[in-house]
Image 1 (cartoon, rainbow, N blue to C red):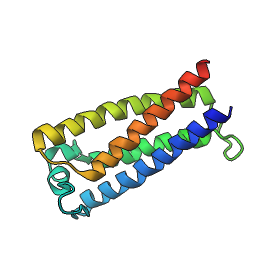
Image 2 (cartoon, rainbow, N blue to C red):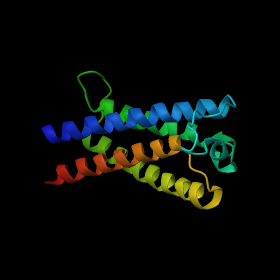
Image 3 (cartoon, rainbow, N blue to C red):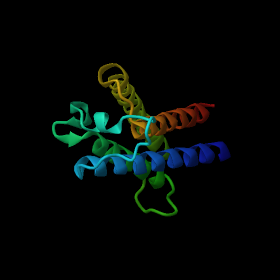
Length: 148
C-alpha cells in the first residue's frame, strides 16, 4: 500500500531527526558542554543542567537515543528485502505506536517541567518532542489505515 509506505518513510524521517537531536543533547550532557542556543531562543543550559535532565544518573537524552534506535530498527526490519530478521509488519506498527505513545507522554511531562517548573525552554528539547509527536501521528495513521 503506497500510503502506508509514505507514512513509514515520514516516520523514519521523524525518527532520524529525533535521533540526531538526542545524540547531540546526550553529547552536551556527557561532555559538560553548553548547547548552541541562539540568544533569545531558549535557555538550554538551565534545562540541561537541571535535575530533570537525568533519571537515576542516566541522561534523559540518552534514553531518547535508545528509544529512537529501537523505533528506527523496527521500521527498517519491516523491509525484509534488506534484513534477514523476520519482523511482522503489524507487530512493528504496534510496537512503534506503543513507544511513541510513551514518548509523547514523557515529552509532554518534560515540556510541562520546562515551562512551569524551570521556566526555561530548550529548543533542542522541543525538536525532540516534535519528532516524537510526528512519530506518534504517523504511526497512528498507519494503524488506522491498516484497519480500513
